[in-house]
Length: 300
Length: 300
Image (cartoon, rainbow over all chains, first blue to last red; front, top):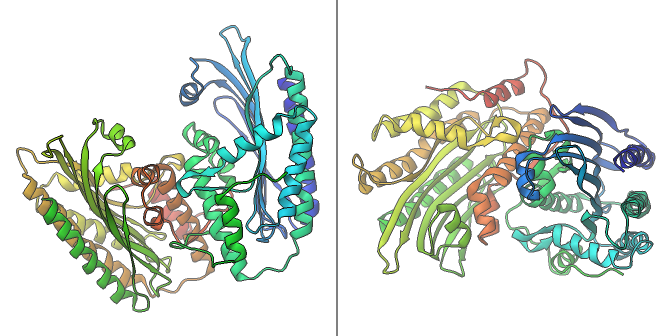
C-alpha cells in the first residue's frame, strides 16, 4: 500500500506542476529537496511571481521513524514507529478573481515492535477560498468533488463536505475560511470498503483536482482588477493566515514537531494586509462573499 | 488597588496617545468603546496611515465576572470571580528604520464566594522589534528599562530582561521576535515588597515607556528608505504575525475566550509578506539583525 501511494503522489506532483506551469505561462516551479534527520524527507516545489500564481507550493514528503511525542498524545497511542506520506498544495493567484485553493492527500501507518502494521489510514481533501463570489465557479468545484465521491459511496460527498465546512472554520471570527469542498481523515478499511478501494478513492480524488480548479483559473485569470479588489484580496488573505497559524492542526503539528518550517509555511500568502475593523460597504461584492462565509451553504 | 490602577491606565492612555499624535503630526487616534457582555469593557484607540505610524493601537480594558473556563484551567483555579484591567499597545511605524514596539501593563484579582480577594498580581513589560540594527537605539531602550527597574530592585532588570528574551521567542524558527526589553508576570507582594510598592514599580514602568521609545522614533523617522528596506520590513513583520498567532498567550487567550477580536488583533501589522525561504545576503544589514535575533545578547 505504502509503495503504491508513494509512487502515486510522486507522479501526481509532476502532473499537477506541469499543468500549473502551462497555465501560468511565465514562471516555473523550483525544487527544494530536503532530508528529515529522524528519517525520510521531501521534495518541495515552489512557484513565485508567476503571471497567474503569485505564490504556490506543491510539496510531497515521506517521513518515518519513532512517532514524535506530541503526535503520540494526539493519536492516543504509545511509543510506536510510523510512516507517513502525502502531497500538500496551496496556490495563491495574483488576480483577486481567481480563488486560492488548497489540497492534500496523505497516508499513515503505525507499527508494533515487530514492524507489523497496527493501524493505517488515508486522509485529505480539497477546498476553495474565493475573494469574490461566482456561484457557477463554486458549483463547478463542488460538482467535481461530488462526482468523484459518488463513484465510491453516496455518503462520501455529504459527509466530507460537511467535515470540510466544520474544519476550515475561523471560529474566532465566526466565518468559514472559504467555500469548502472535501475533508476526510482516518479513512480505514471496513465491511464495505477494503484498503484497496480506499486507495482507489483517494487517487481518484487526487486525479480530479486539476479538473475542479483549472477551469476556474482559465475563466478568471484575465479579469480586470483594480487596487480596491487587490486590497480586499490581501485583507482576506489575512484570514487565511489566521486560520493556518491559529487553527490548522497540520501546520501546528509541523511547527511543534520540528518539521521543515519553510515547507510548512509555504501555505502563507505572499502579500497580506490587516486593517482595523475593516467592513465592506452595504450591498458590495465584498459583502456578498462575506455573507456566504458567515453562512456556509450547500452548492449542489 | 484596582481603582488606583484603573485611574492610572486611563490617564496613561491619554498621555501616550497625545505624545504619539504629536510626533506623528499627520494622523490622529480614533476611539472605539466596547462593552463585554459578561461584564466590563474597554476603550481601543487606533491610529492608521500616519506619517510615522502606519498602524498602531493603544487599548485599555477593564473586565470582570466569572473567570472563563479556559483561564481557570490555565491559572489552575476553580470557579472564581475575577477582575482584570490593563493597557496594551503595539506600534508599527512606516519607516523600516523605526522599530516596532509593544508594551503592556496589567492587574488581576481573584475573589472567593464572599467577594474577598484571594489572589492579586501585576504583569507586563515592554519590548522592541527593530528591522535594522542600531546598537545605540537598543542600548537606549534597555538602559531606560534598567534605570527604572533599579529604583526598585537590582534583581528586576536581569530577571525581567531574561524572561522577555525567553517569552518573545519564535521557537519554530529558533529566533527572538525582537531585541527584548522587560517581561514580568504574577508580581505578588512578598517580604520585600508590598502591593503598594509593586504598584509604584509598574506605574514607574508605564511612565518610562515614552522615554524609552520616542527618542528612537525621533532619530530614525526621517531616514531615507527604498523598496528593498520596505520588503525586508514586511517579511520580518511576518515573523511578528507568526509569534502573535502561534505563541502569544495573551492573543490566544483572547481568541479562545470570546474576546474582542479587532482589539486583540490590532497587534497585527498593516502590510506583510511571506517569501519562500528568504535569506539575506552575506554581510548585509539584514543579516546583521538576523544574527542578533538568533543569538540574543546583553545590551548593558
